[in-house]
Length: 444
Ligand code: PMP
Image (tube, rainbow, N blue to C red; front, side):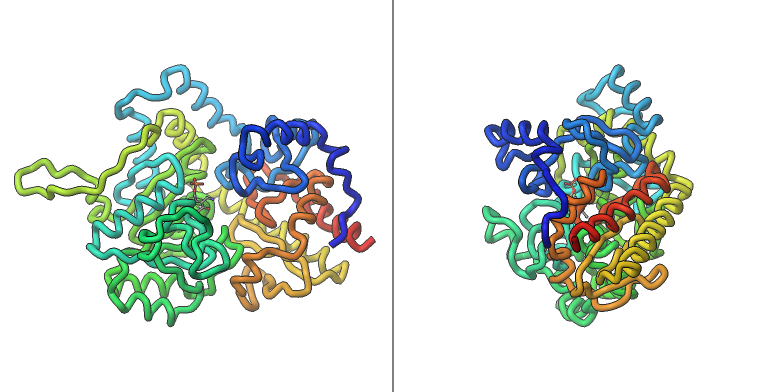
């Protein structure tokens, strides 16, 4: 793919200078692996609504939205107000506080499967805790996951997190620890049945959107099969709703699809755009975190600490955010807008006779432009062959495409993005016309 009409260094000189400095103090000059970008990543100074401004003063429509945390947009007034009030009252009391109770009450009320919840500081910590709770509850050691499904960066979560079934996506992992987690191909119900029927697995975790924020969608019926087979084999079913939680519907993907897991991991929208995560679920599983002080009570428990668990700032932001997500109208609007965005892009592809597709699950959308795209949207449904390796690799020239979209005022995220309630019709039009003009420029 040719470089379309770009002079990155001319257009983003302050970002380039910042990156030069960053290279002296941050490995690769970045703070998150997904920000690695050639020739250099952009540095952003401020954001409002669905837009952000780079240090170079260039305005971008944000399709990353806090990696999905900012479903209400940047600078949501109620969140800003709640955090501003709380920062003056205190950010850490080395004690429980009223807001953590209120926050937990909302989570238990909104998420169908959650009787009890324990807060963490991130999604990674939430899934680590899920692994541990499943083992404590079942007394089994092995753990099952799906290839291409991302659950954070701890050792066991990295098994098969990329396109490979067996390779942890990192070096430096504990070689003994990872042998207990196995990844199988998504959408293969027979493989799932064969593994679960061994009766050896403590838990089975998946992204209910499909792996990589719905990049590799789940086939229809797979979630139900997962529910039935885990129930039959005494395996704890964990939905990783770090992205989908409160986003697909007030109660997350389990609410959206009507399938109830045993445990749920959450983060992102949970904390209103501040750091925060949680694991919640059936009382008898969550009870392994509880102290049993009574005579004859359980003497051993699952331990958990974490300086910033349920900290007052994140709790304040979380409450203010969840209160705006409770009636489902935000999610309904965003899901519909995401559908319209994909329709708009698909019309452009058709009009230009360009092979490829824009597809979405809820408010998570992906672009795959290229003749080898194996899937397409028909109405609300994704059709075709859900080819893990191909979809996980992303469309050919994805980085170049993102760069060209920067030039057109759009910041894509993982070959697509996530919408927020702050994205307007004008924003969607600009994304669609950006795709059209990028394709035209590439042809020229
Ligand atoms: N699970 C899923 C599905 C995620 O998408 C992510 C992060 N993108 C995580 C877990 C890890 O969350 P965190 O980055 O907060 O550790």
